[in-house]
Each structure stands twice: as C-alpha cells, then as structure tokens.
Image (cartoon, rainbow over all chains, first blue to last red; front, side, top):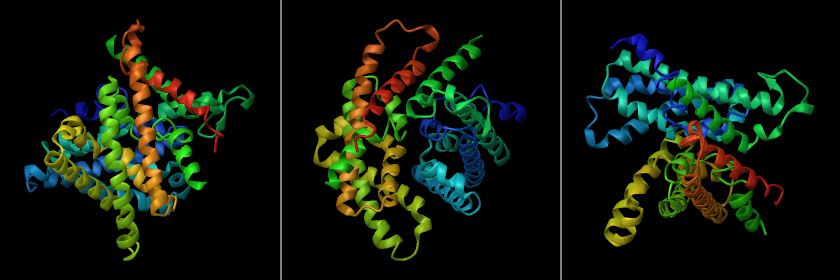
Length: 194
Length: 190
C-alpha cells in the first residue's frame, strides 16, 4: 500500500472525529482548552500506535473467538503505561484530564483500528495507520479546544487575545462543546463535498 | 440527607451524559427513536449497577488488599466485559422476552464509557458500598433520562426542514448542546 496515502488519510479523509464520529466522549469532555486537547490527543496517539504494533505482531496467535477481549487487554496495558507516566511526569495535565485517561481503554477509535486495520496488516502499515489516525484525532481535539478557548476565555495556549469582558463563558462549559463540534462537523462536511 | 445530595447531584446537576460527557456514543447512536432509547437505558442501568458493585468489592478486597492498585484499568475492563457476557447468557436463559428487548444493546455496552467511568468515579469519590450503589443507580437514571429526552427531541428534529449542511450528526449535536444548556439551570441546586 502507498504509505504516504496511509499516513495522510487520518487528517481529513478518514478523520476519526469529523468524518467517522468516533471517540466522542474525550472529544467533548477534555476540549475546554487547546492544551488539554493536545495532551489527550497525544496520549491516545501513543496508545493507538503501540496497540496497533503489538496486535499486528501477535495477530496470528490469537484465536478468532477471543480476539476482542485479547485486544482490549493489550490496549488496557498501554493505557496503564500512559496513566503511570503522566502521573509521574505531567501531574498537572493528568489532573485536568482526570477520568478521561483511563477511559482511553473504551475509546472506540482504538479498538476500531485494532479490529479493522491492525488485525489484517503488517507491522509497519499498522504503526503508520495508528500514527495517522492518532494525529488526526489530536488535530481535531486541538481545533475544537482552540475554538472553545478563544471564544470562551479569550486565550489560546494561555496567551491572552482579548479582554475577558468580551468572552462568552458558555463555550468553555458543557453546552459549548456540543454546539461548536456540531458546527465544525457541518463545516468539514461542506469542505469535503466541494 | 447525603443520599439525597448524591441522587440529585448525579441525575440533574452533574448529569453523566450532558455535563460529564460519558456514554456519548450510545447517546448519539441509539437515540433516533424513543422505544430503542428506553431499551438502551434499561440495559445500561442494569449493567451499570452490577458493574459498580462488583468493581467496588474487587477494588477494596483484592486490589487494595494486595497492593495491586496499578492493575485497576485492566481488571475493571475485564470485569465489565465478563459481566456483560454473563448478563447476556443469564437473560437468554431466564427471561427470553427481556433478552429480546435488551439483547441487541448488550454487546455495545462493554465499550460504553459510562460503565467504566462510574465504576472509577465511585472509587475516586471514596464512597462506601451503599453510597456507591445509590450513586450508580442515580447515574443510570440520569443516563436514561438524558437519552429518552434526547430521543424525543430527535424524533421532532427529523421531521423539520433543517439546512442541508446541518442534517444528521451536526443538528443532533447542536440540539444536545441546547439540552445541556437546559440542564445547566439545575447547577447550584446542591
């Protein structure tokens, strides 16, 4: 397969958030700022790449019937690795992402890629696929987090853009997540059509 | 008194779907009709309460007792997956009509983050077993409530003349946003 195409598909064509509408819980839950979105996106990317590599290595040993539970255990192992590393080296980010780090286990994107791609392809293609989908996911999270942060608190990556007197707080609260993502998906749909 | 705070807090103020963003996939996926929403709500409620009790016992009497706290994520997800399988088998045997109603939703529940999320939250908030059960039941009610209200809204939205670009997922998300705004009215209640 053309590896460059394999790498670029995650950004727009098969973007897990905007096109496939998967992994909605962390997408909506952690994107109150761009930096949180970036942290979550990179954590998920790490799990995706590592799980894809391991699954494509062991795919021939796993019996068909217990395939899904085996995938989940592999994914859960890497999530635990991320969890412990973050707790040790990035405690403040770990605190603001909170519950959503262990919940990477049940992120449908990770299991979806394991089932749809890594269990059928070789190691290198699977690693690139994981990287592509992971970075596409990070891109979506940073975009959503950035828009919400600019509209809701007048900042981006903690750089103040305009006075807090003009912000509309609703965008960093729960309803803002749904509404901004709704309009973003509509916008991306239009771009993809034309 | 503290039980009432847990109940109102979990159902209305910190609604699991609309405020904490857990279980969004079924919230968007199976909310096209009220009848399927009720089925999904029932199945989730059942597994959620059962999973919270089992994970609570495992955490306190096995993981904590033997200093295996770092295995929490792996152990919990395996327990939930096994529980869902078990519930499916038992329901099939004991109550075929209920299996008919809930059966198709059960496999989807393993990867529903609401289940794992509530199990982890119960541990994080250091509830005792009774408080944990009350918390789980309230969250299950909160989930079902949000799902059923949203299904009702979507049945109406589908009949409206929505601008072409917003059809489908976008308009559903915007409707969910407005519903979340309504739920924000409850903040400050506890």
